[in-house]
Structure formats: C-alpha cells, structure tokens
Image (cartoon, rainbow, N blue to C red; front, side):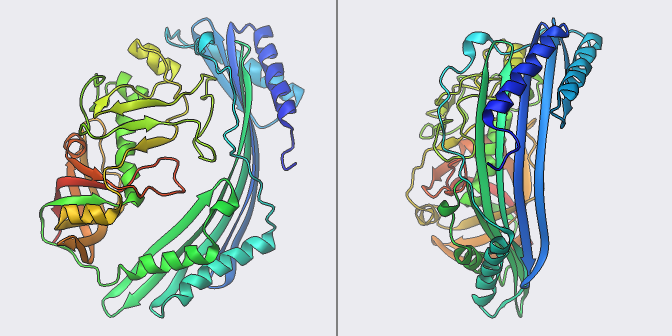
Length: 443
C-alpha cells in the first residue's frame, strides 16, 4: 500500500471528526480527508534536471451552527489535532454572519450507489526507470530531424491519491485515483528563426499512454511544422480551433453556466435555461461515470449523487452547473456539480479535422492560444494565437503573432461543425470546432 492510511481508516477518521463536531455544538458538519503521493523527474539534453517526491495529506472540516458557517483545516490526523481543528471551525462559525443559503445538501440527494469508475492503477516506477523513460522521450525528439537543435526537457510524472468525504446526514464515501504523464518540449531552427512546441500524454493507467518515443517524436513534428511562421493580413475569416484548444471554448461556456457566476450576476448567460446558445445540431452532455476518465465520480464534493444529463440539447440550455449553495441562491436544486463539471461530451458533425478544413475552404486553423482574454461577464473574447493558414481546404503555411477576437455569444451560435477527433487523454471529449467567422488581427 502506498498510502499511510487504508480507506477504512480514513472513513473512521472522518466519522470521528463529525462526532467531535456535533459534540462541539454543530447543528451540521461535513469533512473531507485526502492523501496523495507521487514523483516527478525531468531531464534536459540527456542530464537529470530535477527529481521530486511529493507526499501530502489534509483534513478540511466545515461546521454549521444554524446558518453560520466555519471552516478549518490541518495536515495532522492525530486525535488532538482533530479536536483542535473542529474547535477552531466551531469558533469561526459562532462569529460569522448568518447566511440563509448555507448548509449541507439535502439528505435525499446523497449518493446511494457508489460505483467504481476504475481510476486507480498503480505504476510501480522507480526513479531510475522514470529517468530512463524521460531520456528516451527527449532523445526520440532530438533524433527526429537535424533542425531540432535544442530541448526544453522531458518529464515523467506519476501520482496517486485517495479521498474521503462525509457529513452528518450519515453519508461517507471513499474514492481513489492515479494520474500518470509523460511530456516533452523542443526547439527547432532554420534560416527563418526558431520555434518551439511540445506534446504530452496522460492517463490513470500507464499502459494507456503512448510510448515515450512516440510522445517525443510527436513533440518534434509539431515543432518542425511551425518553422517559417509568418503573420497574415487583418481581416474576418473562418476559424477552426484544433482539438488541443477547442476544449477552452467549451470551458468558457461551462464557466458562464456555473452557479457562482450566475448568482453573482457575472455571466453573459444569466437566465439562459430554455434559451438557444448553440446551433440546433449540437448537444453537450455530462457523463460522470465513464471508466478511467479523470473527472468521473459517483458523488460530488457534497456527497450528492451524480448522473448523466444533457446540459445543452439541440442547442438549448437545459441545465446549469450548481452546488447546493449556488442552487439555493438561484432558487433551484443542485446538479451534483459541487467541485466542478464532470466529463463533458460535445457531439460531432464531421468525422475528421480534414473534413472541417474542406468545409472551411480558406481560413485560419488555430493550434495554440495565449493570454487570458475571455470575459465571461460580457462574452468579449480576444486571445493571441498561432496555427496555420488554410487555402482550398489544405494547410498552406504556419502563422504566428496574430490575435483572434469575437463575442462568445456569436462564436457559439456560429459553430459550423465539430470533428470526431477529441483527445483520448482528455476527460472532456471536445473535437476540433469550426466557427463561421471571427476577427483576426495580423500584420
């Protein structure tokens, strides 16, 4: 066993902490315990650059005294530390203002069936082997082409975690998972200058990842194709967001449909239930129970049962992303999203990105985005970008030093198609997305 505590021991600690909270005068309480352990190694130009080992544990206890709330945490799981932490949370609760929306999620919403999403797969990887994989990955990139003249390094990471959540409704549950990754970043140069790019793969089960050599070769090829990048004239063009960046577009949509933004009136999608935000041929589903997908869980951060659902169906918003608190603020019911969205699936309309390139004809393929220029209060969108200019459905040359801009409201409505090329490593299955037109600022 990698962890210091078994699942049974963590569950017992959780129940003990909740008993202490009730003894301290709490009318309700919730607690979560977590442990994580992992290692990370990185190499550069064949030499070890860094070796890190990480081991953490934490307890967070939230105490409710009526509608007053207090929270405290510790990394010490001893009996005295549990008592002190509970007492601190209870003292905070007694001195805070009442909040009519504070409290546990309703007891009838607690998950009754805790399935196994198959997220935990140990990788018995010693440091020497991890360094060897990183060196193989980097060397494969350097060997790909003589124009690969430098490396920003390769890294191998492996992590294991376990988590217990419980509350005074009598709910207590355990989940555990692993996260393994291999990455590489290199620099290529020719008479036109230098370019860099990278590639990585990740999975909860290490055999599901590409080999270190394949990852290194992919990093090199992605870097080489950027050589000779130039700018393009400013104008309005169709824009195709590659699958490596299209998830961010849907991420902005999720942010605008999330409870915190909605009840604070800081979203461009306020009161959007029943309203059309995407073309009628698109559906966005949440699938919380997909095996071996990082965001899978049968209960959320409040113990609420998760379930598959349409968030958007036929382009129309059917639901938000709500915790019990944000739901109460909005006069609604939690959607089981305390802790965030689970696995999201956007249906595809085209089989491949090549099909979308042909559909686009002439325009911009975006493969990298820079900056944080998305405002989910107003919908304004403006980000630095790099990618490729496309003519007659075929990539013509690489481009950089450009900005793509628009309004998210218009961008979503102007989606022309989605490819079936979502990344295997991603919890959110979002393929390349073609938008009919955006402002592109170049030379």
